[in-house]
Image (cartoon, rainbow, N blue to C red; front, top):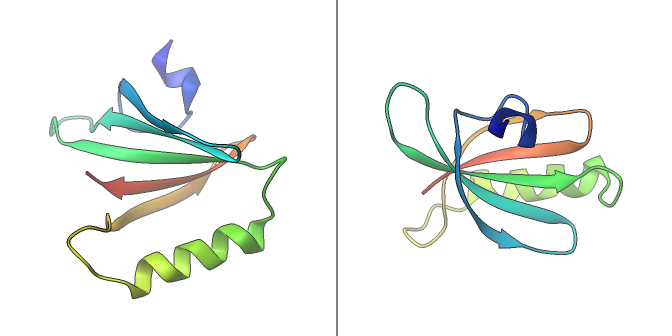
Length: 86
């Protein structure tokens, strides 16, 4: 099922946007609103919590039309998840 790809992520995966060494970014359709959001799933085995915290702080400080805004964060057993504007 699509939900098993990211437990707690909004509704269904539309497609994979990017794949890197430490994370994958997937486009989701938000439940009820049909708005698209990006979920960055950062692998917990490869990245420490303080590294993710540093990225979160930067996203909160920087506001620019070309940088997606941070909507929410949460954890799954295997990933740190950053929900971002599309």
